[in-house]
Amino acid sequence: MQGSAVDISVFNRQDGSEIWRGCPYLEMSELTPMDCPFVSEEDHANRLAITEVMERNHFTHFPGEFWHYNQGDALDQILRKTARPGRFGPVHWDPVTHRVTPYEDPLQPLNSFEDLEAEIDVALARLATG
Image (cartoon, rainbow, N blue to C red; front, side):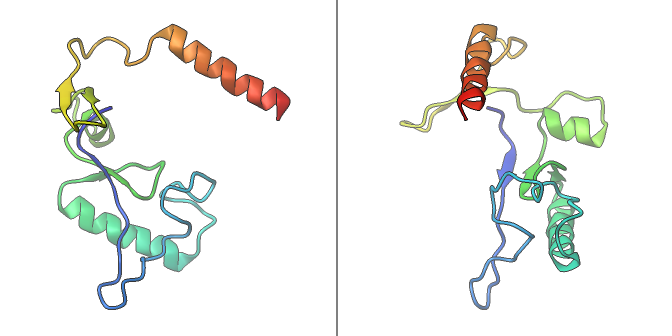
């Protein structure tokens, strides 16, 4: 887990309805990328208007998800092409205590290769029995 990312929805202050951006928040589909060609012009304009506000406040939009913005982490530095390291590195988050602690060695993989291999095997097995 890395700090400094935010996923957002935006709501109309007058009636409380969500500003529609082409698909539901957190839906992972062909409609998810920021510049998806399959959403209406109005929905794309909503995405761009929200992004403009976020960028004016020093966030960078993540092109793969219309709701995701970063600031100061490694992804932000990569997207801005700054060649600087991120201010924030990987952290552990305890969902019970909500305590956040940094990884002792941020250069080590976050997951072991054995864990990743096991996850891939489970996913492939599901596809085979699908």
